[in-house]
Length: 262
Image (cartoon, rainbow, N blue to C red; front, side, top):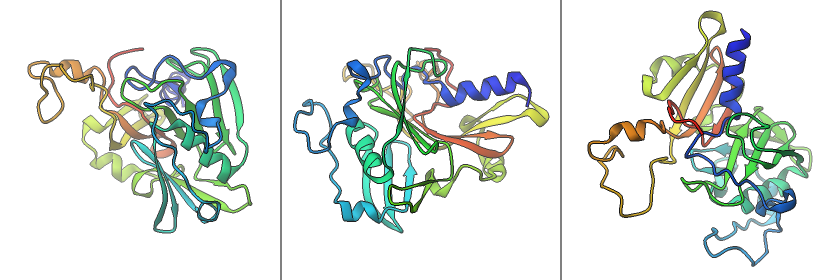
């Protein structure tokens, strides 16, 4: 791949576009609210109630699925926990309990890429990465999640598969999905042999959400007579990034065709 294509792909992997994250990332000292013990009672009134899972149930988890607005822990076909991405505390606490202690990276604003917030990034086994926000973003998410490998080892050494919606994994060839997807659900970087793609796997996170009192929207989410305003934000949700047609990263929230910069 050419340096320009690599730069574009790297920016897409690391960028946190407008309407996706807040610029405030973590509590002072680099400690995310999510890293607190799950049984703490001093959660802010606006925070979701912590998701509670028994140790026995958590030990049975063999799949973690990143959906558009939640992280789903599964034991075969059974759902053990469905943690909304508005709940930073439960997201990191359950991953800590299942996968062990993560590596932590301190970042200043922009260190991780365009729009990357300051604070601490948590990474388990180089396979799943979570950036926890001190306050929810404008669309409500309190974490950013990236899946970087097809599986990760749990605390007890068992393998846990990492997937996106419909079982899409890092390393999969999604050429069929790319051909079938409408142009609104994909965007290309580079050209020819150096082409890479971002493919929307499942929409979610409406970046145009604003407090009640705004002008009404159409059934497609556009404000009446102001469709261009929503198109500035693109379509948010969980996306796959590819090198040619092979999935390299699955991430959420991640907008497609966002025109507005940070």
